[in-house]
Image (cartoon, rainbow, N blue to C red; front, side, top):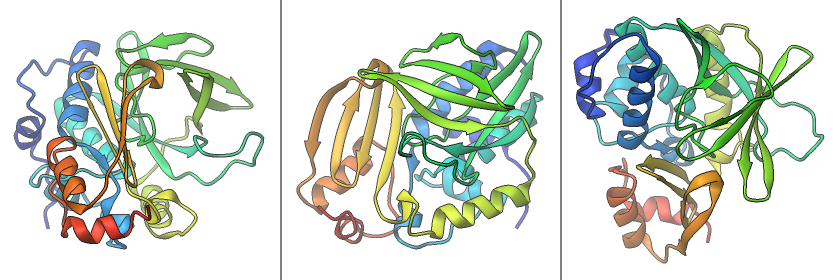
Length: 271
């Protein structure tokens, strides 16, 4: 299969018709369009289906099909688009802390994000952190609160590591720790294998979906569907009662056509 990237197909998929200048405005607009059109979803790991990271497979799944993916798929696709446009992009990797107990040791590098260098400096860009999708680029500056349409974020540095945190209704919550070391495809393949197969990783044991559209964040964890606004404020919440409801939510809210019947997925969501 060819690894050639089809930029026009991607731009059509995300509904982007704006300029493709190498600037912050274009970067923001692309990120917004990407997040609205292509949801975060971990259906394949939950079903024990392989997650392929070659560019042809990622395009077939996220661009040519009504599917989404998780961090490696999203950020590899977004990087390919930015590269094709002409942005200077570096792939990075992080250690998730969202559900890690306070003070616990750092885990493996199982998250992918990007660094984009613009005329005014470096930006952290991430379209694939499926617990709190980052809705805009963040300047790589420490100890500064950065506000986006849906959140407030902060980067801090210690011992050569950056910590990204998000403000929640009850205070700050750590997202992930990372360093500036560039990663190669083999690094992502290793992290992807662990993330999609290990029983200790959330995606193999629970359904996780998320999508940002307008000023709202839609999240589904197993059968609990929630709608959030700024800084994680929950404004609506309900529990899905059956596979029909799950199928409707996947289609209407997350714009996903699953690879199997909703009944098969619903059975794996516990209760």
